[in-house]
Length: 225
Image 1 (tube, rainbow, N blue to C red):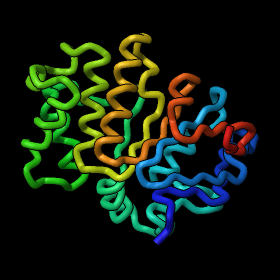
Image 2 (cartoon, rainbow, N blue to C red):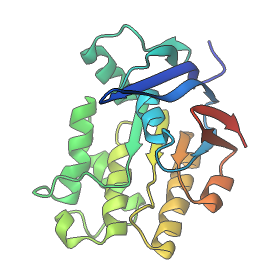
Image 3 (spheres, rainbow, N blue to C red):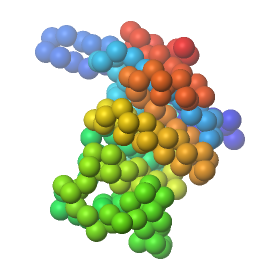
Image 4 (tube, one colour):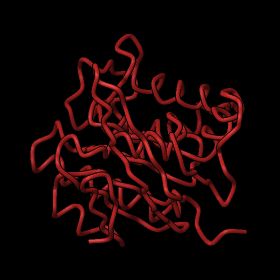
C-alpha cells in the first residue's frame, strides 16, 4: 500500500482559448499522507482550482496520473469514479452551493444521499450540525443564515460520508476576517479529530502557514515553499 493517501504524478492540463493553447499545469507532482494537511497558494489564474478539480477526479489530466490510496483513478467509468469519490473525498468551496429550498439539515443529508451513505443518515447529519455549532439552526433555510453559518453547513455536508480527504477551495474567501478565522479553526479541528487529510487552496498566507506543508503553484509547476 502506498504511503500517500493522495498523489499527483506529472499531471498536465491545458485548455484551448480561441486560437491559443494555454498550458495551465506543466507536470505537477504532489503527495499527501493520511491525516496530513497541505496548503496550495498561487496567483489568481495560476491553476489552483484546476489542480483541485483534478485531485478530486472532477476533471481528468491531459498527461500524468492522480492516485487515491495508491490506486490510479484513470480509466474508471464516470459512475465508478463518482461512487469512489463519495466514499473518499469531501469538498468545500468559496461559494457554499447549498440548495436554497432545503433546510440546513436537508442540505447535509443531501450530501449523504449523493455519496451513497444512507445508514443512520439523519442521525449523523444532526450530529455534524451540532459539531459545527448549528444545533439550533437545523430547520433554517440558507437565506436566513449568515455567510459563516452557510459555510458551516457546507462543511458538515462535506464530512457526511466520513471522507479520508477534504479538499477546500478558498473556504473563507467570502467571509470577513473574524468569521474566516473561526471557520478555519473549526475546519482544522474537525480534520484532526477525524484523521482527515486536508488540502487547502488559499490566498491567505496565515492560513497556509498553519498547514503541515505549504506548496506554491507558479507557471504551471508546484513546489514546496
